[in-house]
Amino acid sequence: MPRIGVLSLQGDFARHGAMLEGLGVTPVRVTLPGDLEGLDALIVPGGESTTMTRLLAATGLRAPLDRFVRERPVLGTCAGVILLGTRADRLPEPPLGVLDVAVERNAYGRQLDSFLGDVEVAPLGRKFPGVFIRAPRILEVGPRVEVIARYRSSSGRDEVVGVRSGRVVGLCFHPELTRDSGLHAWFLSVVAGLSVPWDGRLPSGSAIATEAQ
Ligand code: GLN
Picture 1 (spheres, rainbow, N blue to C red):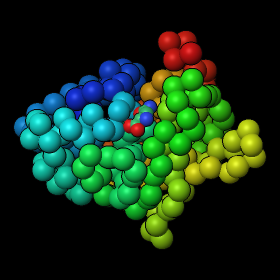
Picture 2: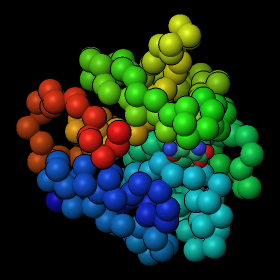
Picture 3: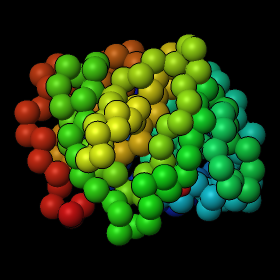
C-alpha cells in the first residue's frame, strides 16, 4: 500500500486526507521532519502560504522538505503551488523552487472574490469543477513546465491554473473540495506511478462538495 503524506501544518489538509481515503489510500499527516521518511508522494495543501512558510522554519521541516520535493512526487494545491514555485510575491522566505513558475498571490482579490468555474484539465480530457479561494495566478511558466489546466475567466482571459514539471504538479484551485477524485487519482497513478486501488475509471460525479459552497 503506498504511503502518501499530506503536509498538515495549517490549511485544508484534512480534506486531502479524506480524498485519499476515498481512493483507498491511508494518508500520513506530516508535521515533523521524521514524518517524511518512507513516503511515496506528498500533497502540499491550500491554506496560507505565509503561515506555512513560517511554520516550516519553526518545525525544522524546511530542510527535509526541500530535499523531499526534489526527489519524490509532489502535488501542491493553491497555497501549495505558491510554495512549490520559483517566484511569488510577499512571502517571508523564498519558496521551495521546484516548479519553474512565477506566481501572484491573492491575484483575484479577497475571500469574497472567491469563485467556482469549469477548468479544462488536459490529462483528464475533460472539465473539472474548479474551486478558487483567494487563488494565486500563474504569471509565467518556464520552458520545461507543461500546462495541464486552463480556465477562461469571466473577462475572457485564458488563465493557466494547473502545471506539471515531471514529478511535480501545481494547481491554483482546490480539487479536494469537490466530489471529483479524478485529479488525485491521476496524480497518484500517472505522475507518481503508484498502484493505487483505483479502477481507472474517471469519476463522473463532478459536483462540488456542499461544505465548500
Ligand atoms: N491566498 C493564499 C496564500 O497566498 C492561498 C489561498 C488558498 O490556498 N486557498 O497563501
